[in-house]
Each structure stands twice: as structure tokens, then as C-alpha cells.
Length: 244
Image (tube, rainbow, N blue to C red; front, side, top):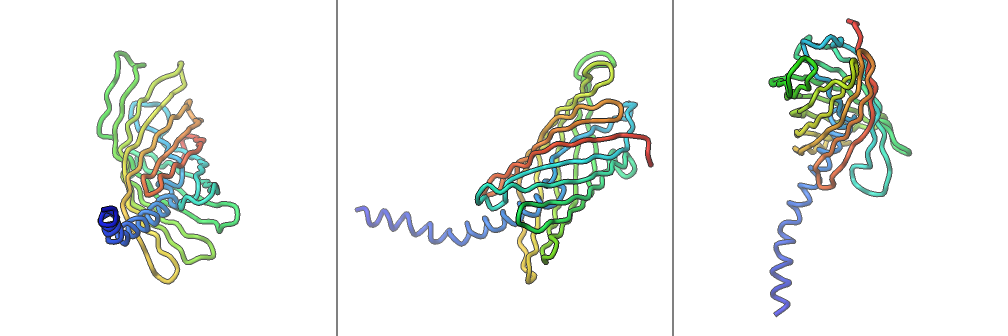
């Protein structure tokens, strides 16, 4: 009686194997695209847009992130560095343009770039008085592109996050801002020879920022829910000043 049972177990596995393989390949391609563009290749940072806040709305930000290899083999760490120009409320409540570099030991560097927008659609005080904390909710769409140096490999991404943040005062001039960003994104990897794979993946990020009137320090992490879950984590340093 064991033989028919094994057959019944094996036949569905054989029939589903090509489908599962295709899903895994699409997920890996999508995860690679997200991790090689600023959308998930750099740790998330949320700087709320608040028209009543005296802190300047424009500035610069440097970020460093790290994650393991997307295929999940070994323990190779991949580092990313990026610089973001915060353009303030020119085309949305907040517009950010990012350029960056991703590299690891023994692999070719990847150049990345992208643009991200923020539209806040809810802002509610959590207490009474001018110094009370504020709950802010918004939508954060982003587009990204990247290219691996000395290879014909391109990455494209389009993501949407829903940031939920609490803005609070820590003393007379220090702001603390914990946040989470559930979301998802589409990614496409175009390899040598013109072959391309793409797919949609869910993401979840979060972190906290502590900043004064101009300088801020930020910690962020983001997880991509692919066949192998991948976590990107890192630090950021921001400067917000009256530049145009």
C-alpha cells in the first residue's frame, strides 16, 4: 500500500515543479531588482512633511545599508551607499532623488538611481497642546533603475509604500520619529542576451529617526518577502538646510 501513496505524492510534485521553479526564478529576479535600486537597496528613512514644522524641508541625506546575497548561498554580505537630495514640496509633499552604489567582495559594482515621492493624506494629534505627538500616514511611490558595471545587466523597479509614523518631541528641540512602511513592489532584471524576468513582491520596512533643527541620525530596516526572505538594514545621516 505504500507504493500508490508514494505515486500520489510524487506525481503532483512533478507536475508542480516547473511552476514552482518559474515562481522562484521570478521572485529572485524581482528581489534582485528591488535590492539593486534605491527602493530596497538602501535602508528606508521617513522624514515627515509638516507645513507647520519650522525645520527646513530641503536637504541632503547619506545612507549605508547591508544585506546578504539574494540567492541565499553562503554568508556573503553586500553593501550599498547612496546620497539623496531632498527637494522639499516641489512636485509632491516631498520629493527625493537618489544616486548610489552597491558592491561586495569579488563582484562588480552596481550603479543605482531613483526618485521617490511622498503624499501625506492623514495627520492627527495624539494628545493636547502644541508639543503633543502626531500620527502621520501617507503614500510613498518610487521608481528606480540600476546597471551593473562591465555587464549587460539592468534592473528596474516600481514600488509603493504606506508609511505610518509618529512624530514626537524629545526635549525642546529634538525630534524622534519611529515609523513602519508596509508595501510592495514590481521588479525586473534584464540579463545578458536580452532575457528578462519580473514579478511582484511584498515588503515591510521600519525604523526610527532622531534629529534636531538641521542634523539627523536614522536607523532603518526592510524585509522583502521572496522565496528566501531578505532583510536590508542600515544607517543614515541627514542635513536639512535652506538650499535650493
